Image 1 (tube, rainbow, N blue to C red):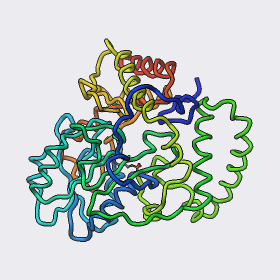
Image 2: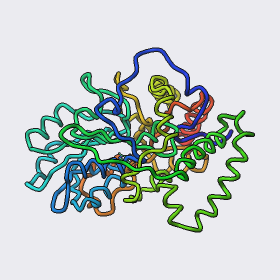
Image 3: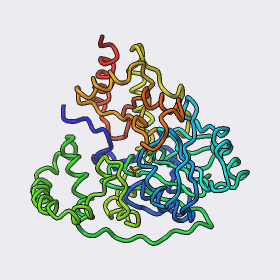
Length: 386
Ligand SMILES: *Cc1c(COP(=O)(O)O)cnc(C)c1O
């Protein structure tokens, strides 16, 4: 089959609506700014919080390396805290790391499953900490009737992890934090944000009737792109590293607005359908893996109001399965396998174990039934292989 998309791709059915209420979204948590990545939103959040040199920001030991450079960009010091075996925030460990210079606590709702926000909010209030909700994995969802992102003084998300966007992140600030103005990244970037998702959709066998229309445009783009790459500053202004599977942080992008086409996709693609299908695909994959050896889901349940980013599985031998899936061309996510080089390796054994043992399958809304079946069968074959 054509490549199974590891991340959402443009497709016709995505425009359709499904029945039921529209799920809670980080974009509803307060006034939202649309930027080009989650890491840029973290940088802007810390800026709005007036975080600067001499101050400390608490980050989870179980993290994406992309979360750390925005703290350094502000001149502040990252301080890593422990999580429990199920990836929940360890407030006792955080309490032991507090001092007068500690300003902000960053918590991540891993894989789309919310942290215990009421308790975390109370903890921050008791200790005079600002709370930054990292909703990179949880654009949708709620806790105790409130959208994710509404417990924090600020919240960030990575919309491109949920929508078929070339780029996209968002920032929500609660008063008295004030946003700073965003600028356009220019026409070249706007074009790239239209063409890149079309190109990926065609490569994954979607939008087929558009192929003859888009092909000449893409050929033109390739020619222009090769020319632009020879002038590296122009290339930088077209392609943020965040859109290119890189953890790199580029200050140039911090104050750039998300492209018009990316913002349009957030409006026209059905959030209701996105959420319903993510839950359905999560359940379909779990069901198809029943009886296979050497795995369990990280979370025993998929509670109402949770809209998963991926399906995280705890494997007995994740490294072997990883290599098998890689060879088979199956998409997967290894969140937390790589951590920030500046963090002591033995700081949090739970984080190290989660990074080493959890392997996640995509469950996004644009996977087709045949692709889900193939993914499950491929993983099953990997688990059963000697
Ligand atoms: C992906 C990710 C980010 C950064 O988002 P980008 O859009 O890639 O910059 C931040 N936090 C977590 C937990 C992530 O997984």
